[in-house]
Length: 407
Ligand code: 3PG
Ligand code: MG
Image (cartoon, rainbow, N blue to C red; front, side):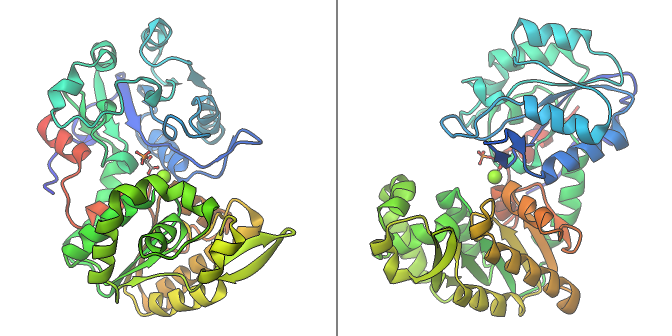
């Protein structure tokens, strides 16, 4: 991946109107309609305070994907930004319609405006191999002429060739991307080995493919799998995990079963699967064996103590640890324990072994913050899935577009 872009530092931003495409996709408490502590929002606020106080800033971002429960408007994101920024943040429930256009025209230097969830524009989520096709979407054609500069700083979504990521005729990188690449460069170029990756949470097949890519490129020594990725692998190997679990990964499984089996058999010594799981029984944690999951037929929301022990043993031997996705559904108290223990192990590896420890993704970052450990690992990245791809030096669409569309 060749890193060669115009940076926000290369131009004078004072008095300018700037559209910033960022990644503030966050973990949402849907009952309270609140954002759970979001490292991505905090990174954005720091970036705004440090660099854009004398500009008019329009924020363009997404939350989740169409069809998901947390595919919501960005009004609560605007509120959360306001809370940390400590100055008013405007929001319009519009992306590039009349209301948005007017709000952008009216925006003054020193003000911040958040547009609505960009994935509500149906042209957004295609994978635009041809960047000029993305340039011709109504959204890009409407918004681009309204601003002086576009900064694409959605580092956590750099692997998506979506219209708002690759579609601007001219674009620059922002402070989040600069900072992330400076830290991750070390891992891209010469990571200290052994290197382990913790793979948990959702988006099972994306993470599985990224893991495979890293094994094929000989970048990775261990993949410690939990969450939906582990369930996907178990099921592909023929272990039934119960209908409740099965339903969630069914689609990924059908179209990838052979590939998963082949990959597993090739790297079986390096792919570490859970040895036990946790289910909720009368509000308490109940440890079950992998072979019991089918009979219980309920959400296996965390990994059990034997799994944590096995994971910890490997982690304490590693010099580089990348965590992407929590091992448990940490939002629920009953499924939180193992995520906290793994975060503690990462802290111990940082302190005792001088390991480089990186936590990525909206969920795992929130988990570390909730455990009060965010400052005790080497780096909290705003990157999720694509961090796994960066490791192998894959040319990410956002980085490619930044290179090809320099200001
Ligand atoms: C993330 O949370 O990983 C990024 O915001 C990208 O989200 P996506 O996988 O839905 O594109
Ligand atoms: Mg995510």
